[in-house]
Amino acid sequence: MFVLYVTLHMYLYEPKYIAYYNDIAKKYAEDSFWERLTYFSVFLGKSILFLTPAVLLLMARFYKNQQRLLKLNEQKKTAELTALKHQLNPHFLFNTLNNLYSLALKKSDQTPDVIEKLADILDYMLYRCNDTFVSLQKEIELIENYLSLEKVRYGKRVQILFENNIKKDVKIAPLLLLTFIENAFKHGVSQELKEALIEININLENNQIVFYIKNSKPNASLEKREENRIGLKNVKKQLELLYPNNYTLDIENAKEIYKVTLKLLAK
Image 1 (cartoon, rainbow, N blue to C red):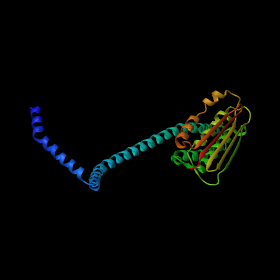
Image 2: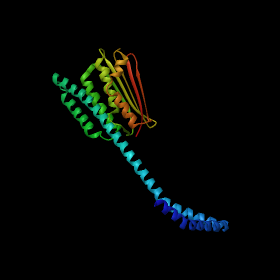
Image 3: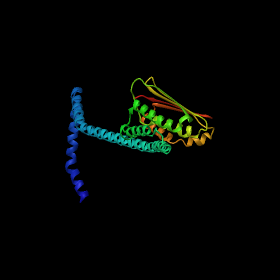
Image 4: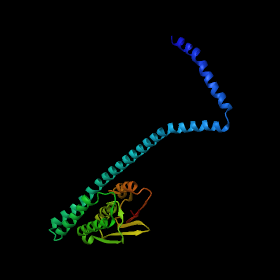
């Protein structure tokens, strides 16, 4: 039946189609150049009118997908940074509480001052540094409080030289610098039998934050000490996330000296 229908349709209508298109082709051949151009313009206009909504729809979908990917990447980045901060904070709190515990055992008159500084530190870490970037001046205050606590803990066992030349406030990722200072105490001062030295310098040069720290350390296995530096890997991950191609980190692990120079683009 289908074959019969097709055959009948071709017999009745195909000659009409052929004749119709032959007439169009003949008329087109007889038309002038400008008339042909008019046909083409009409065809082009109709094509554009037909295709424009489709193109706009594709562009809208592409833009929506791009925005979705950007949002997902931002959420992933935020989640990673939050996880890294949570890894840093317990280590810091553990060291600080150890300081306070030592003072309490000695019934030191410095205990109230230490508690006050610890309260300031906790207030900052819990409520003031949740943004991606924070005031460098606030970070310096945090460092000064931390150094005060460590000075109380180690006393004459450590000589601390801290200088900063920040004349204008800029932004920096929170707790980055503190990690290097923590490591200087943990892997340098705490293991030194003689007087230890920690030298810290923070400057602003050519719109770059330049952080330098040097600490003495006992002549121990370099490889072992490098692997045990808590928080260093986390800091590197944060730098890659927050300062892609906008930072340099140089670490020198010599026989009795450990040096770190970090340069960041000021925000």
